[in-house]
Amino acid sequence: QKEVEQNSGPLSVPEGAIASLNCTYSDRVSQSFFWYRQYSGKSPELIMSIYSNGDKEDGRFTAQLNKASQYVSLLIRDSQPSDSATYLCAGGATSGTYKYIFGTGTRLKVLA
Amino acid sequence: NAGVTQTPKFQVLKTGQSMTLQCAQDMNHNSMYWYRQDPGMGLRLIYYSASEGTTDKGEVPNGYNVSRLNKREFSLRLESAAPSQTSVYFCASSTYHGSSYNEQFFGPGTRLTVL
Image (cartoon, rainbow over the protein chains, first blue to last red):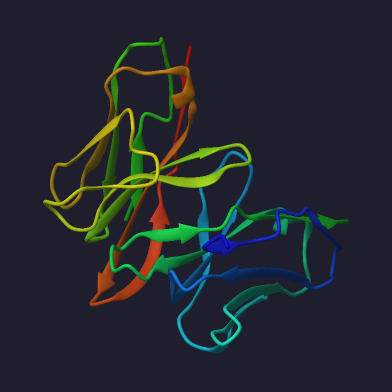
């Protein structure tokens, strides 16, 4: 099993819909998680962090962490064409090395 | 605050040439990282420095060296560039409290082509 796994997509949603991005992780990943948005040709930009079980909301974004299922998700409400990007899920390594482990990203396309 | 800055933004090298990529952060972060990103490969960790005075290998360290010059600066050196090192290079920084990971922030990247 990959340490952090994401479906590469593309995930296509119509404008105004909810986009749901998912990530699973292994025991080698600690329970601090981060979602990044990366536009083509740009660097990853942090959009959400989540440290405890449950939901965390910030504007149109909601991050969800389920430690029992080793599952992290990002919901984007009222999706806009400007949300079209690759979304990277990352967690800290449990080895205590201060390394971050990234998934390969899910490409999201919001259709106008 | 500028955050994480990288120079240069673009570079073209010939095989066998050397160069140093520079990275600086002004967020007083303990840890700094170098990643490379290739199409379809995701981010791969080259080297990192958990704190000033320490450096450690990541997933793909061969062909690279690093220097943590001080708390702010972390450079990546290619001693003898190879076409396989054509990539986009990102520097990142973060801080930590005990065993808790905090957010990691990225620089704008250096696009390197080795001919």
